[in-house]
Length: 193
Image 1 (cartoon, rainbow, N blue to C red):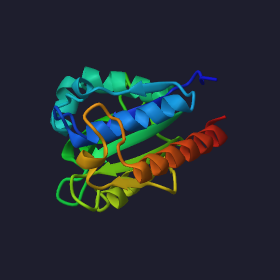
Image 2 (image 1 turned 90 degrees about the vertical axis):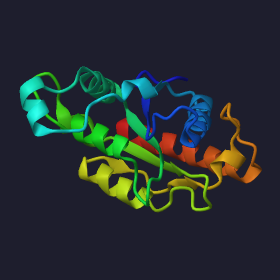
Image 3 (image 1 turned 180 degrees about the vertical axis):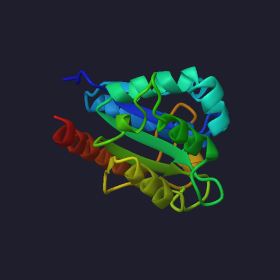
């Protein structure tokens, strides 16, 4: 049975053809197999300028961030699928989270994260699959007050294991992703009811 509150899925990249996009598509398919509602953030939704206190003071929080915060507030949980950039998660993702955490009259800020479960998945064409970025992302999400799911997944050589349509072609990865998503859905349901 589909839950009324969706799981929000946030990409770490907005690049056309991003390998992490393949991982995201495979993850979304498995969430849907678990009969949960899914709200996928599209690349075009991530258009905020680089965070700057002057911009915030003079222009307010950008409209796309206000909308993203509304969606996060409505979500029961979050899944982040991110590539690794030089051993860290991408600046696009950091900037999005920085803007989302801002409290203003037209948005609740950091409150949208507090107490919600989050699953972290990294990806890379390299063998480590974004593994170096995941501890930094884990710390960021914990700092926002989220319940970070213990297991995580780093998908190495994602471009060889998941095709352009998001179909997993590697049996071991398919099983690992199935188990991870099923476990996370159970974890999220226990925490959020």
